[in-house]
Image 1: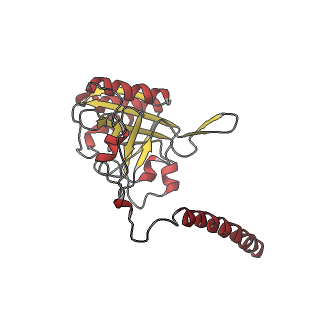
Image 2: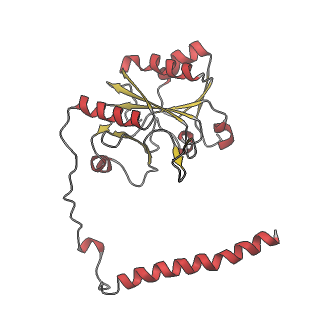
Image 3: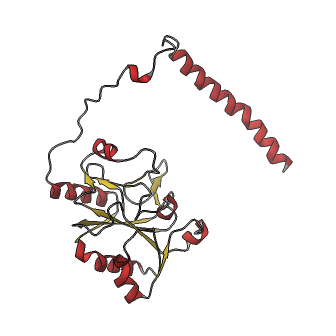
Length: 240
């Protein structure tokens, strides 16, 4: 214990010196700024394109699907009535027997899977530990919205989405996107609809990283397998 404490103590001055250098550079860069001036006194021009091209809703959904597929997610398309059967098939192919869902996810979504696989569905709660989540086969959630131009699904912890940990710890995430009202074309459009005070998780394909030789490793920071279900119509709930 004493050695660990000593090592930590030896590292702190170096970290403090780096911090001091960075803050010193910031202060020097701001030396000619009057003390009374505030950021809002000089609005930043935001004349960039809000969206790159015009698309029909069907074209936006196709672009989202193409990007997600390129990022190695598996994309499924269905109408609202076909969602429960599709989720049953996705979970069955995965061999899932234990699934976690967030509060607010409609019970009917997983009813066919539960009936055929005799599966166990757990509802997320603060008592569900990381260790318990690591033993789960799959998690099924809704989303806040999806961005076509970047192939990104965004979660904000709303009903039907749950806590951030349930979509980061299990190895398999199934995310449902309502294309009618949750699909936007661009990041600027997404930011206008999202609350920055909420816990936002931006997902573009399965979690992955690579080393300097570009050897890809999946599942490092989140699930190794991502299934995205694009639903035409309204399967509910309204914020998940």
